[in-house]
Length: 344
Image (cartoon, rainbow, N blue to C red):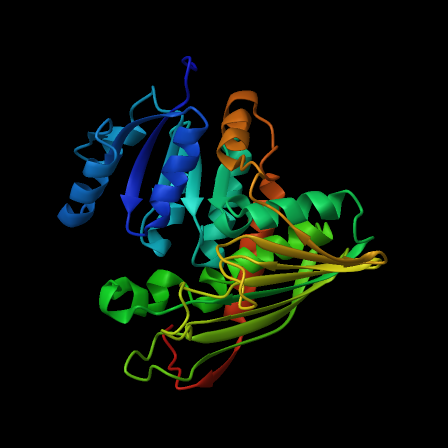
């Protein structure tokens, strides 16, 4: 495969709306969207309207066999992402998956094997860190030593269920992978990033279905405690966001350092400030509100740089796989509470 003046990418699988964020990040960085494939006519129609420059492909195989394509992006049904990513790497392409990138530890093991064999990139789009300016700024501040050595993160990821608009796979655990593997993968990624941990373990985890017994395979609550070689973490996620909140979830991240701490209110501020991306920092000098409105987002640019130069500027491959492994392990060993049934 030879690189053109622009990185050419295609999309396979558009079952989650995150694919639009993924595509926009790549397009904003200068990549060219060439083609796309999905099986669902309604999803195809909307994607085609949004990106008229992209050619509908007749099959996923058509895209995989197109030697002019450098990168495949996907937000397919979660349990279909890893097999697609493995096939993309085997066809000499890099791969950008929506989170979660895997739904079983067996999928992860095979992806690790193929990635080591092909040396292609298997990237998971952790949008809560990559595409949130307050989180990007918090990362810069943490790396600069603004709060001393980071020793713990607490990540909270509440979501609104919006049940009438959810597809059937949303309620099937084998397809979505469980709440800790799905939603909490964001917070696990941030735990590793902010603490700088390169090895970690799941100390304890639990999941429940407290509110939705009519959907016995849906997990609507979960939490996990993590221990890394450079810090600890706690994650809580749920599907309980009430309709009175003006956004889909009051997602927060707390970063504790030896000389201060930060709180990121990602999508709203209950104290009354309008908009998103609120960052508060407390240190020995006082309490600071950090304006994140001018912070540049660069995940698409960094990934394209990695595709061209075979580097790991967006995220080390080992980090990507470790974050996925921890989320999968947390789900697999979770104590099951509430109305849950064994979905296999």
